[in-house]
Length: 151
Length: 316
Image (cartoon, rainbow over all chains, first blue to last red; front, side):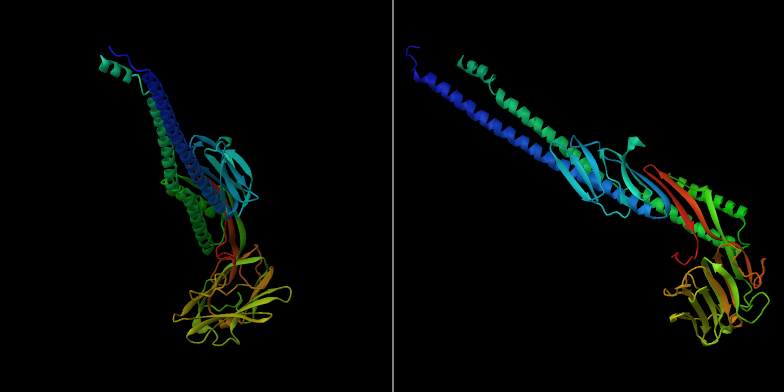
């Protein structure tokens, strides 16, 4: 304690502290941003994949109903399709588009749409329902989508 | 002291990194949860598809097959008798119901919807008798007139008694009131049985099959000659209903025959007896049967009406 410390030492500490903080902040934000975007990318992929799987199941059931409706007369077919209420934590809607002969599965925020074409011999009835288990009804040569709660 | 102070300060530092660590850990947990739902969906995709639609179609096919058999058997005996036939359908329904109940599904015939279309069953069951009318007259004769449809036209013919060439051979004449007609000549040259069809425009098709047995079956609606398929054999091809059916040169064929025509009462009563015997006769028979069937499983409901008319021209 006999010698007085030079004045520059305090400055050096402050500067190094500021540098330390800045580098740490950059590193942290890069890491956080990276992790966040990985999660978001994966989420979109997962949601798209799930919509595709659910869509294929619904389309398969529609075509099954179609094949059965073509046999015999006065045929009624009701097929119950089990599907998750949400995909990747997002609600979704299922739309049967009669004019384009396709099935659209849509989520909002992020806006994702999966379209599947359907080859049908009976007429389709256009309708949109919320995602979840659903009922496919083929009656009087018309195939329609219904929520299970309506039945 | 210096060391202690350093330690003491050190334990206060790094909160930022710690918080970041937590944030990244949280993001990774979210990622894991997402991947978990992805695994669930992939599992959903690869999960075995519900077998019940196939079973429902299977049930329909069973009903179709068994009812056809039932109609054929009922007609073979005494033609159409409502009570025994309805009972048979009930038995069939409960047998099928039991079979499908074992697989955990409900499959039944709605017997109250059973409707029978009556027709005229025309046949001869004496296999050594010629194809002449009930009085045995050697001239060509009419079996039925104003026929709307015919099913299961089967001849079981003694080949040795057939004519050897087409000229002078026995033939069936299906003609409408206009000029259209359809003829089927049946002859046997000693080794091969021939069925040759003709219409107002000339020859249509000739089917042949070598036969070594003394009797051979010609099914004109199914298109078979002695058991061999002849797809181009088309019963009453080019003739529009209603039409008349007659046998020409009936002394050139020996054996049995039977067919069911629609509607009831189209038979020619002077040429055919009205009660069951070996000789040519016409009685009330079942032409077609309609019944509604129902199939239920956990995820499927299926209801349809089945129409059964075994051996009808358009029934393949």
